[in-house]
Length: 83
Image (cartoon, helix red, strand yellow):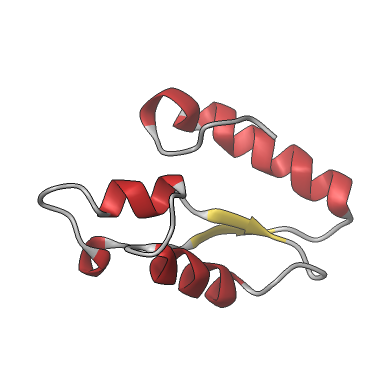
């Protein structure tokens, strides 16, 4: 996972990380399916914040779009849609 932008009214990044990691083997999410492939496991999963965003949900969405575009995570990563 490329990292997450976090806003004060959303779940802490640690909760998001736990949810993604716990989905491996129990879900059909993109994260789960990726880490269920041959040669992968939950032990390979890493998640980290790349920016602490201060502002409202519109600022959060703008920063998330910025990083999705900057890192080209739609074509190079597991993100399947642009926010």
